[in-house]
Image 1 (cartoon, rainbow, N blue to C red):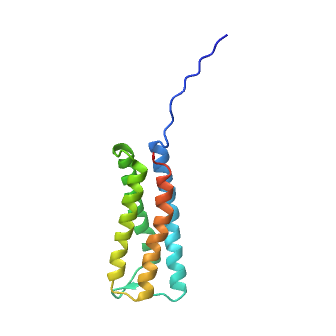
Image 2 (cartoon, rainbow, N blue to C red):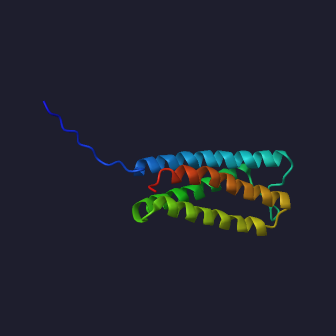
Length: 137
């Protein structure tokens, strides 16, 4: 008796896995940035920018919004880019650096500016590698 095995090539990711990974990374990054902000505030770093306080939950909300923008970007690149992983990493690293500019020029103390920048870097360190692993090289 002869059996024939049919194999199909597997890709590095599927759309569903990419989205699921992105959502998990978004939740983790949001929690992490809120934790960083809370620890910084507990250590005496002001969360006031231009005289208005940023609530700790605000860090999580904005992290979620911009992380989801990154997940959408990854989904688009997975469909249209020749090298989705490379393009995603390069693009998101540039966007992360650009996201630090408003923190540098914000009307806030040096400690507050450093804390704001740290939250951007923490979120990027969680989301970018997690999503990039799910994109084709």
